[in-house]
Length: 218
Image 1 (cartoon, one colour):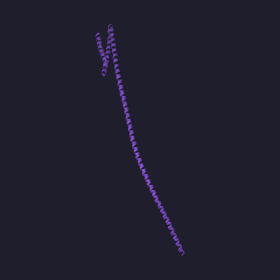
Image 2: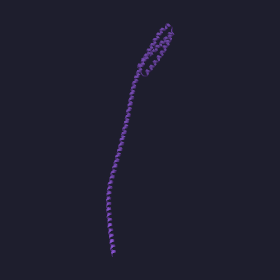
Image 3: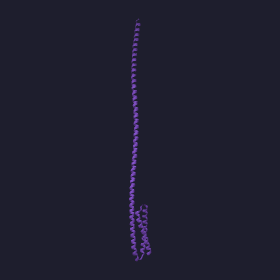
Image 4: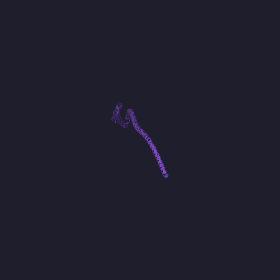
């Protein structure tokens, strides 16, 4: 029985020494290696707990005269394992804090990068919208200029048309004045001709009457 307990105690010493060594390495490594060491330490502690359970069972089966001695040792071993668990917990907390700080730092950098990217996209969109508005405004100016040029051409054409119409009206007025004068002259000649015909008719009528009178008298 003593040899079995001695074997358990040797295993316990080997496990705790390995655990202590690996816990001491945790602050000096990082990344995946640190995670691997922590996982190995946790497995070794599980083995140590199982070993202590086996030792507890063996101690319970010992005679009363020997049991108290090993119970004191077992209690010391359990205290040692508890201290190792605390040391591992401290290392894990420190590691978690480091990782958390690193994640926060990376998160802040990522957030800043995302904010910068968002601002850059917003600025790009605003520039595109401004460029489109400028292009639309320039297009509107060109269209307005074309419309203005067309209106000026139309006004110029209408002005020329009005000038030609005025010239035609002047020519027509002149022609009408000339025609009026011609018609007036023609009317005067017609009246004069009619007057002459009336006078001639009257003279002929008088001659006929006189002729008839003398002819009747004879």
